[in-house]
Length: 151
Image 1: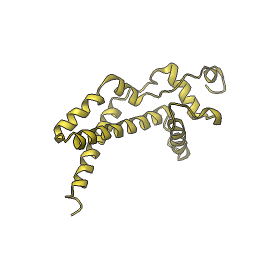
Image 2: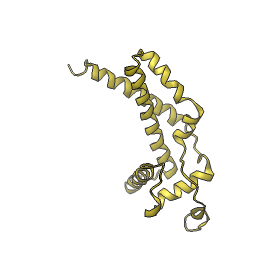
Image 3: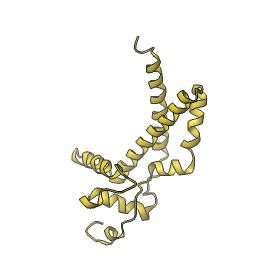
């Protein structure tokens, strides 16, 4: 039986951990642009990409994925704000990262289900992880902010 196999059980555990944190983070998401001095520039950068500026050395894939993500939702006419869409992408990948942390605790350190979940709470609810899971973050681009064409 597929549904009683250890792989299926492990998948279910990780799925519920990821979904749980996704819902918690979505409920607690602050609906303002976090660190606005930084985030407004990033939002403008993603909404109006300039090919030579979409690569960032320590956000290797983020800008490209965010551009594709926002473009996809805009193309289907969702009407959702770029700020919400990018935060949703951050929340999704933050939850997946916690799922990986859970897997490490559960399998590498052979902790029980309860111990693994409680151990995953530690990084999940540290201020920096919780804050940056929904923060649109990159480097400040004051030239874009000063241009009236982008506002």
